Structures are given as structure tokens and as C-alpha cells.
Length: 196
Length: 327
Image (cartoon, rainbow over all chains, first blue to last red; front, side):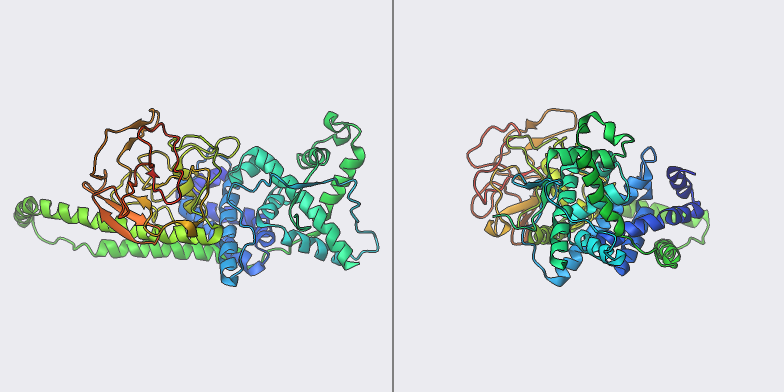
């Protein structure tokens, strides 16, 4: 049964429909949240918060639209809330605060993947070592770049769907995603050079 | 000077390759836009392929149950609250004669009490609105602590600020001043219920999580400091007495589907549609005061811009500290 049909059923009082939605998305959403907030326990909390919000706002969802982008919009908002609270708790200061919707750096540098001489893991590189390095690089990306990389690559949202989830124009999706890939490649290179 | 860890973009060939790979093109090698770019596509594929190493262990087995339990608790709390409300209304256990007598006396009492109740209700709503404005002040300061400025989206110089209820344009530029204020809700600094005024029945208490603005001018709860100035002052630069939010600017009449127009000059009075003769006004220092005059103690008219007499809807203050609260 399509997600949107389950939403309609839940609105009519079918509790089982809500359980099905949780079950259907628990793997994918949980993985998204772990990578986004970088903490399994926090990801569990945010996951619960997300579905609590789905329950509270279920009447505002337009069943003519797709449920999944709506769910991820809520989850991303909750995850950002968590990250903001945890930043405050840690009393860290942003060296260059990012204004919502204004993250396009006009003077951004550009990377050429072919000329950058990026080292790639060879057969001798331990699989676990590669996984740890990739995790460290992705986890270290700025929040807005990590978020878009997760949606577009790991969760295979189309650019249009990413725009819908993040409420940003299509052009911004592209430029932000290119920045995410470029920054990932640059930092991967730095990380590998440091570790050798 | 650029830090080596600063974000970097991709050149256009790499960007095309990444786009093609992520769009799941079937025949990337034969894509006309990527002709002669095969090595580049292969490289981009290798770089993206690195990400596959980032695996995440499955969720804990009790996540499903604990989520259901949490939602169930929320439902129970709501039901409990509703039951309490129901039980607090006394049940009737007498006949129709008694009921008629009580109804008659209630009618007389109501006739006498309505003006008093009405006045009390208006006072209560004014106080409730002031409390919400005070909470909005906390939200504004939290936002400023994180970003250094008042909430402000992307602004196209010279654009109009009264197209409420629209999404940002294709380049992400906002179309209304209320979209700036709405960032407090979108970024979860305030709930829609808090950023509202009880006396304004048009403001929704719950909104679609995807919304970027209130649906109409009538639904916007407060007038907010004009954020269309070219210069973006730091929050710390703003004078303490400067007005930031108030019930509603009485000078401008804006209705969906109709052109912006300026109401006749109201002189030295400052009425509001929701509270009658005056306005609750929040200033930079977080204080909320009730005023029937549009001037702050320093003589600045909070509804207009210094030196501007005729408004087209694209004006912005040029001086830091000049209050101009608009829809």
C-alpha cells in the first residue's frame, strides 16, 4: 500500500497504518539520522521525535504529495535542532556562521578531480581503515554539505526531491552538492596524506 | 586568504559528471554533454564510490516499539487533558423547569456581564499577546546569538516586501518581510503557537512543516523590522530602545491578490486591528510596552522610514536603528 494511503488510513483511526509507516522507514531514516547527527543514541531520539511530529502534524500533510520527502523534511529539521542544541551545550562558537539560504560562496575555489591526484584506497588498505577515514571526512563536513550529500547520494533523492526536502531552489541544490563532493574529495586527500 | 579546509566547489566538467552519476543516467559514456570526458566520469565515480565505505549498523531492535510507545504516551496525555476538561464541566441533574429558571437568570446576568467580560477578554488577549511578544524577543535573541543578526533570508536589492504567502523565488530570494520573521519558525526557535497573537484569529497555531511564510497578510501575527536594507547590522549594533516587533503596522493595507496601498495618514495615533487604540511593541532590549503613539522615546516613528513620505513597497531604512515595522 502506498505511504500516502497509509496516511489517509491513519487519519481515519487505523493505528496499524502508523506502525507500518514506522516499520517501513525505520532502517532508512535511522541511517540518515546517524550519519547526520553522528551519534546513535541521539539518532534514536531524533527518530522518535520525527514520528511524534508526524503524528501531531498528520492532518497538515497533503496526500496529493509524496510522504517520503515530507518525512525527511521533518527529520532534517529535528536533526538540525538537535545539532544546534548540542552546539550550544558545548559552547562552541561558529567561526563563520551560515545564514539560512545564503551558503553560496561567491569566492569559492574549484577543484579539478582529474588534476587533484586524489589517492584511492588500494587492495592493501584495510577495509575498516578506509571506512573509518571516509566516516571521519563525511562527519567533518559542514552540516549543510553533509545533509545534502546524505540525501542525494546515500538516500538517492532526486535533485528535485532534495529541493523539496530542504526548501531550496534547484540551482542551490546543485551548487551545494558540488561543494559537498568537492570538499569531500579535498578533505579525503588531506586525510589520507596525514595518515600516511 | 582561503583555509585549506574551506569548502571547495567542482569545475563544470566534474559537476556535469557528478550530476550525471547521481541522476542515474544509464549511458553515461554516451551522454553528449560528457563526450570525451570518460576519464573524468570514471574519476567522479571513484570519488563517490568511496562514500559506500560509510556504513551504519542497523537500528536497535527496540526502536520500533519505543517510537510507538512515545507516540502512545503523547496520545494518552492529550486524552487525559481532554478528560480533565470534560470533567471540569459539572453535569446537570435537574429538570426542565429548573433549567429554564437558571437559563433566564443566566440571560439576565449575561446581559449585565457581557460588556465587562468583553473588556476583560480584550485585556486578557492584550496581555497574552504581550507575553508572546516577550517570548518572540527571546527567540530573536537566540537567533542573533547563533547568526549575529536578526532573522533575514536572501534579499534581492530593491525588491518589494509585501508579497506575503509566496515561496522564495527561483533564486531563493524572499518576497515578503514576513518570510524573514518566519525563519524563527522554520529554524525552530519559536513554535507557530508562540509566534502568534491570541486576538488574531487568522494566525494558525499549527503550520505545514514545509511552509516558508504565513499564508496571507492577515495571518501574519506581527509587524517585523524591515529586513530589506542593503546594510546588515549586527544585533549588537542596534540601540536598545529600537522597536523590532509590534502588533501590526496600521499604515499599510495589503490583501492577497490586491496591490499594495498606503492608508491615509493616521497622524500621531497608533491603533491596531486586534487591540483597538494601541499596540504592544517589542524592543531590542527584550522589553514589551503598550503604546498608543507610533513614536519611540527617541522620536522615531516605528511605522515609517526617516525621510520617506510616499511608499511604493520597496523602501528600506538606510540608518542603523531606524525602526520600520512592516507586514
